[in-house]
Amino acid sequence: MAKENGYVQTAFPLLYGHEVTDIAIEGLAIDGNPERNLFQPEAWKLSGLYLDEVQQAVIRDCEIRNVMGFGCFVLNSADVAMAGCQVSGCALEGVHVGGTRGFSVRHCRIAGNAVRMAGRGGVYLCFLAIEGVYEDNEILDNNGPGILIGYRDRDNLFARNVIRGNRQAGIALGAWFRGDTYRTYGNVFRDCVIEDNGDAEEEGYGVHISGDAHHTRLERCAMRDTRPEGQKRQRVGLSVGPEVQDVTVVECTIE
Image (cartoon, rainbow, N blue to C red; front, side, top):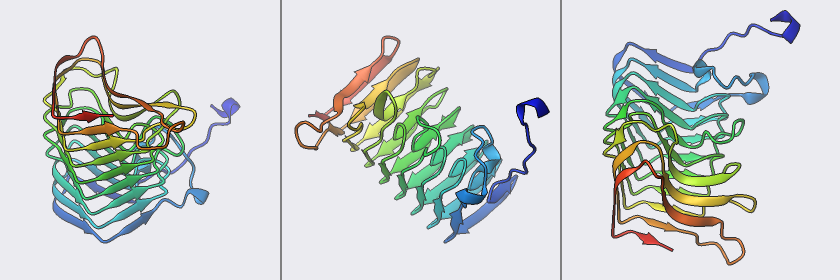
């Protein structure tokens, strides 16, 4: 509306793949140039890298930084692999995935994202993220949970990740099964370090499982706060909500 100072803006991802198969994206630096671009919280296409209906894709050794939307957005795709990448300083989530089977993120550093909208965090599983693998990543210092899991996201494996220093207004979380979680089951955390989440003004949780989550498994994970006395803010290792069913905890350390 003109009376509300409305405007029209051309919005597009820096790199866009749509209905393509067997592609490789390697060795690119994707910079969002925030000084010259406006922020729109719901404009998906303001992503640095946006893949929609893509099959068999590899994203390798790329740096995605300072994007005014999502760093990497993968939607309605299958068998997309992301390896050796860095995603930092993005306005919304570092990595966002939905409607996708077999998405993998390995040996990536996802740090300092959600700078324009608190709570969006590092890695965001949105809707129907199925059979993904997230291994050997560093998920650090995001302005929101390190990992968010939600609506019908199932059979995902999170292994050997370091989830540290994530924060947001209210309660900071290393990993969060969101309150709107529905029919989410079979997700596994294995050999992860979830530590030092929260800061001076926010109390932190290591893992908070809420909503309609079923058959969640934590194996050999460490949930801890290693900061000096008086600076420790990750007060809760594992929190389980009243509607959650079948949480299995095996050989984990909470300290």
